[in-house]
Length: 601
Image (cartoon, rainbow, N blue to C red; front, side, top):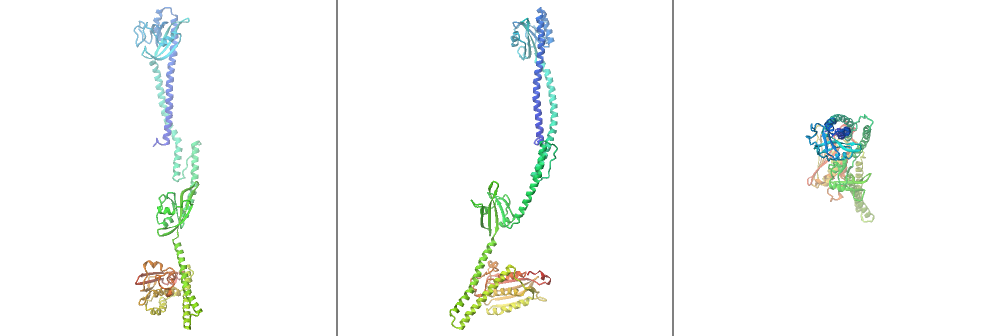
């Protein structure tokens, strides 16, 4: 609204100042003019009174004087009363108030001849003073201007002349002047109002422009500039605001760039970053923190109480480090107090790092070392024990000695295979195993492997089936290391033979599915519980932990199978039902000569 704006307020202020000033000046002029008119009238009556007093003092006959009173009163333009030295009225008239009997039938309460005039003015005049007063006169029942002049004969006061002029006659002139002053004031107010409007507009225009630019700056827009049209304080302020706008634009642009860099750095971190105040309200978080903790972390919201308690810095510390369990993860939390120029404000910045895999790897490493130590200790114990028996002469004859040496030979072979498996597995995990790739016919590969196990399965009373499903021109070839592919199938069949009881069945099959060749090893053994399926590919893992290591299993076979299959660009899968058996499926890509160069080495 106009009245609420600076233009309206400035206009109203200027008009108010003009109105108050005119009111004060008007009242002062009114009083001054009224005082001036009464003073001038008083001086005028005084002069006329002095003339009348001189004329009466020079007169010799009383009758002559009395006849001249009305004439003198008319000439003076006022009522005239003459009193003797005792204060008795001897004549009165003037202002058309008397008749031919010289005052015997006066009007308006006019004093009558013969009555004693005991007013203060009469008393003072008879004392020889000249009097000019204004006030209420009870004889006339009106406000009167009274002028008294003593009549002197020599130095003796023989009477007095009192002239009376009603205030009403003077008020007409004052009223005329008041009307003129009022008209002038109204005109001045109109002119002042118009001028005040234009002045306020001129003064407020740059201020309004500054307000507009300031609002733009508050909204982040620093492009606005104020046109400077004066060199006064307002112009200087406009120049300062323009300079401030430019400097803020430069500063905020620099801060925005730094903030953007910081946000990119923090957002690109693999660790979660979360900052919160002393009450647990979020100040900042990066996307990784939300992903890691599995919950939204909007700024201004309160973090869960449990997370806050686990993330904040412990009392009496500046930095706190701990590991917490959060929704199935192990998270390392490093929290530190945020410090400002005034010291610590209770806010905390916390760094979250998922160490679940790290701790799992550490556990696996410990288990691996323990398993390797155990696996190595068993054959070494056999070797050492039987060697000591031979050295101590416990083997009495050649047959017993050969039996002991045979056991030492078997355990040494087992130890050698274990070391070779460990070396192969280490190379596979590090991607350092060299594969001698070539085009391989699937049927020939399966025949070679089947021939190795036919005697083993027959010896253990296990039925063995070998099948290659061919259509048309037969199965396509695969591209890989023949020895390593054979090792894959050998490990799977060896695993099936170890866990399939006598009377069971093991089958080796191959078929084409799309662009892949599927090798299938199926058994009717004890099967694998569903909860243990994800772990069978780990090193030294055994489903039946009570089985004796006399079967020769190291727990590395399936781990080697997985790494070898992946090294050939394939995949391996297992389906198992406890009590019914397991089915292992190895998928390898079909050989295409043009894709030979793309194979991973």
